[in-house]
Length: 583
Image (tube, rainbow, N blue to C red; front, side, top):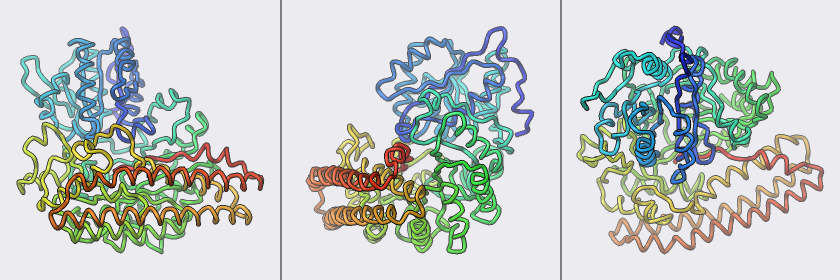
């Protein structure tokens, strides 16, 4: 992409402003912190060209207000971001939207689902409300589309577009490669942050695009699953540009917790070029005295004891949580997913980060179509040893995303449901061993029988709540320790709290391991029924609720001791909200 591609070709403000609605469907990660950077970048580009743009939050099953807001705008274009987790909500919302707005506005889909399905999505049942989809990065195609709609041009001149002609046939244009110089993009519009008074649990930052990884289960742009013309597998903004954005957000909103959404923070490839960049980011944060906390994604094989000084620098800059793509507790599965890491790498990075006081979240796939009882038990043992109190990690099944290599692998093996590309059901596959399929389904049924079929929860179970609560606890302790590094009394108080927490988590880990071992044994001998799993549901819910209450009492007790010592616990606790963990 050349810089001139971002230059408007016509003025979108005359004779009256082009009106664009960008609804954000609050699903998945967007429930806990709703800001969505995809629409935010597009809004910034379109506003620079003179368009009137509204970013509108739509809550699931409570979207009447969002619909009313869009109708009042009388938009010329409506752009809906589509992710696998939001497929069904998007389909329902889009149908209601079309019925309310009539045929006049152009409704266009974008995001990962649109990128990988393209024209197929326009022919799928239930998606008749869509007029078009944009594939790939959206800033330039949406600008060209806006200019075409406003100026009455030819849709065939819009890059990366699939659209439905008046006669019902589908047309498409070639996909344009994404931005090569991310510093040229405007800062994303922060409408949602402003809408919430700057008080979100964390603020998302996008500092790179692409990934040098090649994970078979992932449909984010990386070196094996690109669409359209070849582009660099990874592009990063400069450290100064990144910290300029952070400083602007701190100055405008008083934000102090940031979530870097980059697929791999340290790319390219975990080598010195990437590490020099993250070192420069940390040094710039420290040099500007920005007292912030931040969360990132890392790959295990990229970090060793030799990187301890860099990790310590990142911690001093505010590194608080790292989500590592652990994915498996055995090398056979890691090889299947084309992971460059091995079990030893996973074990090493967990130890390195925890030694620093950084919270380690796990990306993990406990079950998949090729699982054996040997690999399942190896995963159980690994999780018991490293995060045994977190029952949810023991139950995660492979989710299918359009464009991921594993989808084609399953199709070639005859293990993919034939209707996957229509339903986009993330569990639309069969297992090689039906006993393991039953085990995976029954473990999920502990949370809710409906959840075991389609990941729908009627209410958030205590197991899921504890996973997030565990990050809150870590942040609470970590931020006090950071604020009072030389205070021996505070250190002793926190050490006592940690010791009691560890004992509680150890008890929870014993419960979790007994649960998964019993059900695994029953599955292997062909004796597992859903009722066997459901018998664990009430005791597990009760245990996790009781332990949350027990820990809250401990937190109050130790917090009182800290307050008596002169530490403002309330101020620190108010700023200790977590970034959500992906499944």
